Amino acid sequence: MTILAIDRSTDTQSVALALDGKVHAKVFAGLDSRASDWPVKIRDFLAAHGAGVRDLDQVLVGQGPGSFAGIRAALAFAQGIALGNPSCSVVGLPSTYALTRDGAHTAVVGDARRDRYWVAVYDGVTAVGDFTLVGKDGLGAAVPEHRTLRGGHAGRRAHRAAPLRRVRPPLQRLAHAARRSPPRGRARAPRPAASRTVAALSPTARPLTPSMDIRNPYEIAAAIAELDVWDKVSAHNWALVPQTSEEPYIVSAGPEKDRDKSPVAGRLLLFPGLENFRNFAITRQAPEFGVWMSPLEFRHWEVIAVKKGPAEIFGYVPGYVPQPPSDADKEFLAPLLYECLGVLMRIEEDPQLPLRYFEKEHALFARKEVVDGVWQDGPLHMPPDGQVKFVERVSLDTAKCRLAAKLPVVADEKWEVDFVMVPAYHTREPKPRFLYVLAAVDAATGVRVVWLKMSVGGTDEALKALWEGHAARLLEAMLRLGRAPGEITRSSARSTPP
Image (cartoon, rainbow, N blue to C red; front, side, top):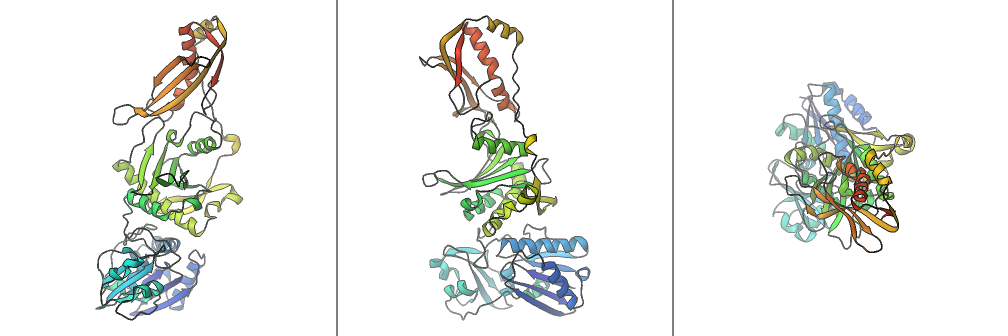
């Protein structure tokens, strides 16, 4: 059985080949995890030992903990080999497995930043529990007695009873590990299938939770909150293009306003559709544009990073009370949020990532699902500015207009009109709707002349339809009162009523 083992989870990247009972290995120290010549290096390495990619029976990938970009690149490369060679399987193992020994008791320690460390404990080649994440004061207690400690600087901090030496992950042991305990089956890149652990092996890598179920959007949301990179990612947006959706999702993330006083640290928003996001972006810059006043009134999903407590996820539909995701929603959201997590980690390492396609193609950076579960980078082109339009359709009854033309006009009477959502009130139904009020008051006396309560219908455009109907409602109010005001003005941040 011919096995190729690769690991790109640390700055010390390595490759090994198990061929004809022998194991050949090579280490690439200081290689960028995003190096584009990696496939060439693999080809040359295989050729040096008389092999090619079509000779491989299995590709074994070290899945960290470590650099997210490096792990993703290694998985994508392995998946590419398997797509071209149906007889070749892809297997993932934790990279820490390479530091174990048959019959030895080992603790592998890694720097998880912020005075925290992750610890993996092994009896022989069998993991004892999952990864644990501890502070430096609890590091000693997390490492059982009489364990050989491995992990460089972090391991030295944990040294208790055994000598320590700096160890670079020897990938030839991963090739042997595949023989000892091969988890059969094909791994789906770029989502780690064989290991649920996502943490940090090198000081430059970013830690997440000690254990994360990538099928659970709430655990992924917690990992997003744990990153705490809101300031770094707020400048630019990016896109996700899943196969299961007819429209792309535009992602906007950033810190909470007045964060020092707010219980929320930051938010990540996913807007389905280019037009939907365009309206949101314009409204943030020009509040008088359109009917919307806040993100509550745009169709989107939102991850809320709470400072003290678990991260929250809510779905927003215009005019409806935000709701947590259903089971079907969770299944749809999990891969999207996992891709968001990956992009956030990459932006932390490369802040210019969202601008990759902007200058040359005037396009958003996007993650595109090319086949089920396999995503790749690509551009998402935005429509030209000339094609961006906002249209309001206002319909008035001709007969009522003729009657209104005959009404006396009270020149000194001025109506101030507002259309507001009342968040404290909503309908009592499985999918509750917010209460909206169309109000007009006499500017001089403050007396209400119009006070109409309403809620949306059953479509995403229902809120806009309510807005477009206000001219007819005001016309009917004039006919009911038997007079027309000399002036009508708005008193809110919404557009001037028609």
